[in-house]
Length: 283
Image (tube, rainbow, N blue to C red):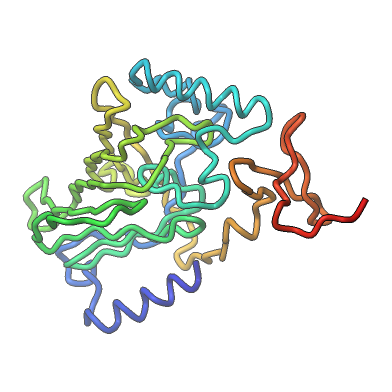
């Protein structure tokens, strides 16, 4: 994360004499924005913060993708990673998981683009606000291609809301949360967002995000909220998934690493890795 911030600091210094917030027309979203937590809501972080993860999200899944979720949960109950295997092995989560805010987010607003600094397995989002058109040929990515437009909703001459559309093709498979709650395997999702600061409580930032995806029977809209941390000069921890993970993927299997860095099975009766390319001890 520190390296990412250093790159952006150099970039912004070289391209703009002042930040967008300093010119008065754009909002000041500086600071560390942590995930809004509902007291008493168990489980890991969820896409809809007001509901439990996994089946508790009540996502409008098609029957096909309900079965994908059920299979993911069954595999996890048996010691596997289910539909969350890629991210468990430190691949990027991509959209929309990258906006779940496992760690606080930082929003860097400039006239031509807004950057969301994330860290971990997902580095950042770049939301273009330079009036560009959609490119004809887009390389598949985890975060997608985002184009935004600033809106002045109260007519005071200053922008307060960022409307964003993010399109694929995406790299996948992707999931909303660690249960493997799935997005469609065609990776053609579309995300529409309205990001704005709460007028009654400026310490709350909203991301109203609508998911349009072929795993859903209808568009799914949630209001993700982030809470501004009290430290005006936040400390940004350096965190890398690969340093923290005790999982190793070999072939189609995922194994554990012990404290001694030795390979261990992740589930009962899991086969050992194929060692055909290693010299075998003589019998």
